[in-house]
Image 1 (tube, helix red, strand yellow):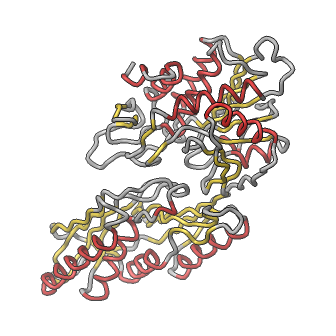
Image 2 (spheres, rainbow, N blue to C red):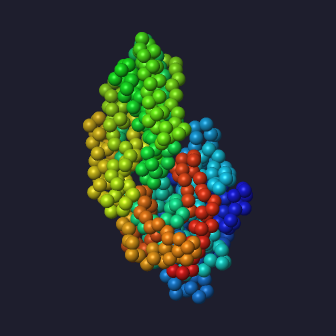
Image 3 (cartoon, rainbow, N blue to C red):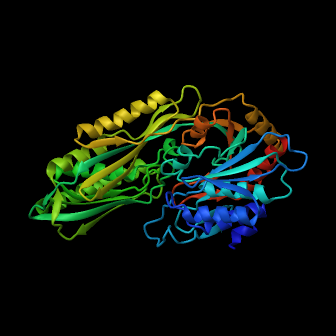
Length: 482
């Protein structure tokens, strides 16, 4: 056990510590599924596993609570796997290296996996803590939430029996979430057409790094800089002024993360080399001034490279760079119904040169279905005009808020009673699985809450220690009083 297992509430932290030792990338959840099944067997809990790997555990009501309505504790078992470029780490096999940093728990150069590992830990603790009073209790652990909501989409028949569902995948203590945005992914694919590199060219590599990144829903309104957009801006300028020829571009990784790093390899005529370097220095200084209040650690570097053999065919280069500069990114509209809530957004998530094609992945979100469709059309239009083949994921629905639900009333009352404070009731501009559960179980009432996490989906992810006891006490009180 690591040092975090000695934190309070100890039972919750012990479960979280154990979870961090099990590799659990999205779509590779076999080891964490085995861990959960082993947990159920060890503690004599009834369990069920469906065809896609979702696991539900069930525990009978504590004595005197048999007539209470059933409650589902829900969390997802996969985690976002992001690391700093200078960190050696194998997410398929290595345990997360946790550490205590002041009032926070974080990982050494990687994502922590508290999203949603701490929710899993609380659910497991509730199942085995004899002091927790509850009606019929279920704990549902879903697969592949982060890259496709596969577990929620394909939840097996008869997996849930409860009337109420507590989603444990929120990131702000003191806030109760009763709605979320729906989303869809848009992928643009260009043919990777290369030609012989021109003669008498000097080649460079530009790197943008050390951006804050973050969750493409929850952090999209914070003005975080997009690394793909930033590199594209430099390429656009070089194409206008210095006959720049692009050879390679790579940026971002995950569809639901604001990209933190990107780089490109390109050349300019040797006769224009000095002019280009001067323009680059002015460009870099302008960016540092532009980003200084939003991205305090922003870095952009330029290094000379050996000559390359091939560059992008000129029309393909034009189409790629111009579409990356032109495609919308960030907040598109704020909600008129919920003050301060982002209604609609889009994130230019990644640019990858693959075998025979260039793949650009983006994600669109909105709490209004028609607006989600429109922003998807905006993105498709830019890439289609540039000649790319554009496809979309199936998407997922939002979760319409119900401010009058009994579950919300009881949860808010429990919070006031415990902490003598009024919780904030919010909707979130991020995808929760709740909308998909409602499609299969339309009578469910749902509320989402959790401890405070920051830097989610990036190596800066951290979990505030002081909020975990409050999260645990609220969970226990809701189960006791519902």
